[in-house]
Length: 258
Length: 277
Image 1 (tube, chains in turn orange, cyan):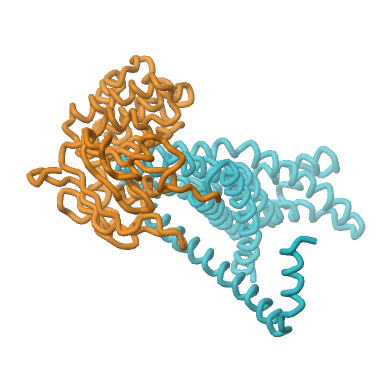
Image 2 (cartoon, each protein chain N blue to C red):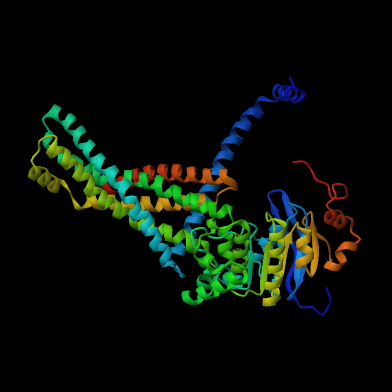
């Protein structure tokens, strides 16, 4: 990351434990404005916990999380809600509200979070549904009537509907076939670049990393152990990164049987 | 016998008797601490939930949906329960009172029993089974599938969107259900008394009206509001704090129904003591 780049998200010394298990251990990470950073790492290394701490869904035990230079940890709930308006999030399982129609899901944040008129929000929702490659007829269906790939597209439409400054992607291609995964990756790049947003993603999928990342960071045992540009990934010189990106069973990353 | 089993046996033989006594007290202490911690968490959750019922933003469409779901759709089950309870009460009272030539008191017994106790308690228990379980299962599923996290990321407080409408709706609708249940229950007693036991319609209604006091009905209505609050808060609490997976959702549902049923019975005694002691 160059010195001139402005930092949108800055994590300093973030620590989070559950009982005696320390999931994030003095973690430092920064994401430049308008760039896409992907965090890679094995299951249980703290990737999801890190994103939930930034979103305020979990409170870190120690450390600082700065958004646009402003501290987000320990904010009172009302300020926190305002903070959330900068964020969009695509969840691993899409997390669509099953009691609401598709257009209502996409328009939800616009109506309830941003106080937009229902008619105007519906028009934006339908435009976003079409922007992620779904037919307009889908708008009046319920989430249970869609396939996994279609639900992910709706989740993406909901994440970008309010034109957020920062978008989080939690394992965006998990559970999808390779072609649908590539379609989702293309849509992510298109939407993020179209909005000029800052993106922070977590994934195991190296195809996804190479497609959507400007920068890559690897998390291991609750710490960032390597970061660099996506072009540097293949010659990182870090044996942990080498083992992970090539998916080798042998190497410094050991799997304890639990 | 395995090595580990042998080691455990030797360890238990070599332990000082004082250790067993200390273990006994430690288990009691642990249980009490666990109970107090759970009570504290529930009290905190209840306080936050009530606060969000009175502070904007409000979600009227959600409230309307819950009013219909909890009130209107519970009417058949509450109506059936109180109808047959009133009918059985008249039959049983007749059987017992006939031994003392006190059949004339049947209308009074039906009215007092239904309005003071049976309608609010049975309606509360039926709504706990129907609504409490549904609330816990729905919110627990939303927790497990990250829909509650999604609400937060869309700048919506789940306490205001999910919990406050259910609390308000249950607290308002259970008194309405019980009032209707009172009428249906007394009507059940009337049907059996008039068409099966040979009472005159006018005699039954006159006696029922003479016996019934304002406080009999109002105490039942007030109890119903308390039971509605209990059903909703226990459903929301167990759903909101559900463990992961299908087992977590199942456990949340069971805990919601069991805990609200027990609390309804406890609070019924306490409120009766307050109203009629």
